[in-house]
Length: 145
Image 1 (tube, rainbow, N blue to C red):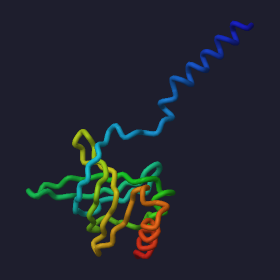
Image 2: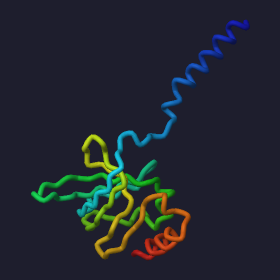
Image 3: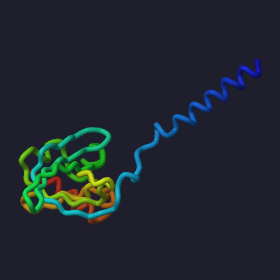
Image 4: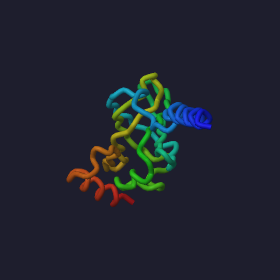
């Protein structure tokens, strides 16, 4: 009976150890720190969990269009910066500023701010949360209609 318990216990421990990576949140391995400023047209504002995405068509100097996907934090966090599910709509002109871009060259990035057509800067990075500059940003972002 003890050997059956031990075998069952080891099997459970083995399963837990093997499944630990499944529970881990994704890391930064796919990104490299790089700041790009890209002007374009919103194609989608995806208010989803676990991350919000802003998709923007960006034209290069030759007129070629690349659809960039900008990753942001979860809706429950991004609302702290004045964003809502109605903040953007297809056709809006914006400038996105990246903090990290995909290492493999894909048009995917994490965003640090979005500049609206009227010049309003909306901060998106968590590093702005909880300080005086963030309070001013939150207030300004919330006043955008």
